Every structure is written in C-alpha cells, then in structure tokens.
Image (cartoon, rainbow, N blue to C red; front, side):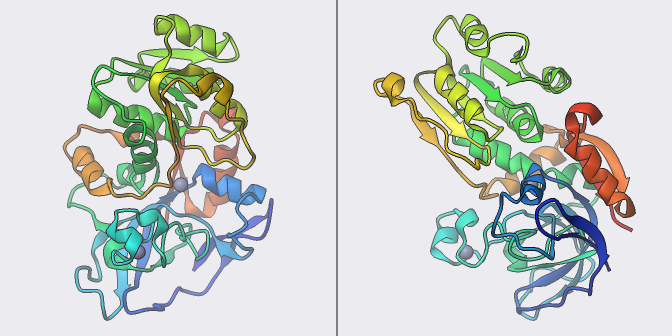
Length: 346
Ligand SMILES: [Zn+2]
Ligand SMILES: [Zn+2]
C-alpha cells in the first residue's frame, strides 16, 4: 500500500509499505477513505515531536471502512463505516474511567506519532471498539473528518475548559482551523461576544462568516487596546489561545477580565512568561488540555442534525497520489488560504 512516511525533520515521502496486520485481539484494520493534514503534522516535520520517530506513517484524522477485526472486537465488523478518533482509548484504565482518554495508559495520542497513522491506504487501530465511531448512513464523510481532531479539540480544550457561558465575552487568539473550531462550538452557548484575533485578513474574513462578532487584525491595530475598546475596558471572560507561541499566550494574559479563564489549546514548544505581577489578584484560571474526544458522540449528533457545519472549514481537496502537493498547500496557508485540506484515498 501507499503511505506518507516521515523520515526525520524536514523529510517525508510517499512510499510503498506493507499492509498493517492485527497485533492484538482488540485491534481493527481500517481502509482509509478520507484523511487530512493537521498543524500537528507540520510540528512533527519541524522536529518538535520527539516521540514520532523516522519511518513513521503520519496522520491521526480520517474516516474509513472496517477491513478486518481482532477476535475480541464484537461491536464492529468488516464493512462498517467509521470515524477514526485522533485519541486511542482502552476504556478500562484509570484515566479512561475518568473520561481522560488523552492519557490512556495504553493509548492517548499514538496514531501518526508512536504508531503508524492514517495517511495511508490502511491503518491499524488499537482498542478499536472504543477508538472508532460508527458513521450514520447518509452522513457527509468529508464533514466528519473534522470530528477526528479539530472539532473536539476546539470544543473541549477551548470552549469547555474556558467555561463559555450564555452572555459571556470570548476572545479567540488564532483563526486557524482549531481557532475556527472553537468559534463554531462556542456558539452552542450563545456568548454575547466572540472576538477573533489573528494577523491574516483572509482567516479573519472566514471568522466573520462563521459567527465572530468582531475581528481584530493584530498587524493593523494594537490588539489589547482594540479589545478593551470592544469590552468596555474590562477584557474578556474567556481567552482561548489557539496558536502555541509565547506572544499569543501572553496576549491572552493581557486580555483576561477579573474572574476569567485562559484556556490554552496551542501546542507550545518553548516557555511563555506568566505575568503574576499583574494577575495575582484577578481571580483568573489557566487551563491546559490534550483533547480527550469525550465530546465526539455529541458532536456527531450536532453535525447530523445540521446544528454544526464543519464542512465549511474545508478549502482544498487532493487525491492521495498528490499528498505532497497537499502538504505544500497546507504549509503555506497564508498564500494558499488553506484551512483544512481533504485527501481522498484511492
Ligand atoms: Zn490533528
Ligand atoms: Zn485507557
């Protein structure tokens, strides 16, 4: 089969690889029908993720058809249409029993990281019964690829951790796919204001279409002053950090209102400063989280009922033989205006 393989920092290629085999009775082999590229894959290619070793097949998002199941798998069978979660979970360990699947002792984020991933014709999924979700008949496959990672991530790490409430004020720093996923799912709670901050006018334009009440282009205006003007000088109840660099985290510290929550979503590679000299008396909270994907069944229902339209995040489509071109397009998003790219498998 063909697979997109990581060969160390800056190196990847479309290679011929053997078919994955069942390694445990609880595994399934899934024939991937659609996958996508994540900002996290770009982090791996930069060499930021040491757990991902050379010769790893990348990818942790996708939908497919069950090809083969292990002897202990009873709730899935060959031919079932499934959504692949970016988080694998056994459902039995202490963390899984607490709903913290991201820290499953034999799972978590392993796909396209510690084990081969979804940017291939076939993928082995461990703990198949608790890591795959049956797709209802007639559902839009492309839209559901957004449920493997970005929608649960934007919702759980941003909106739930950020305690978005009816009538509250929200700032989302970063209008990439994850920031936009937070924007879409924050609207479940009817906050009074959702202010998007980015330095890419095209992404802010998308944010306006997706429901932002105001947008701040941080290249054009000083974002703290602009946001204070929009919030009567008090700041926001929830600041969602969806970039992963020190500047954007420190910006959230400057934007937060007394009693507010800074919900970090971004993947950080270097330290950021914590300004306790200005925050110590402001009753704020700071949260971090790796997505648990506990909200995936709920999000599937909202997509199915039309309350949520994740397909709006898809800007480009490629065939798998063109996957290097897909990486190139996704990697230069400022010029290509790419949000999410869909890769169709043969
Ligand atoms: Zn991802
Ligand atoms: Zn577990």
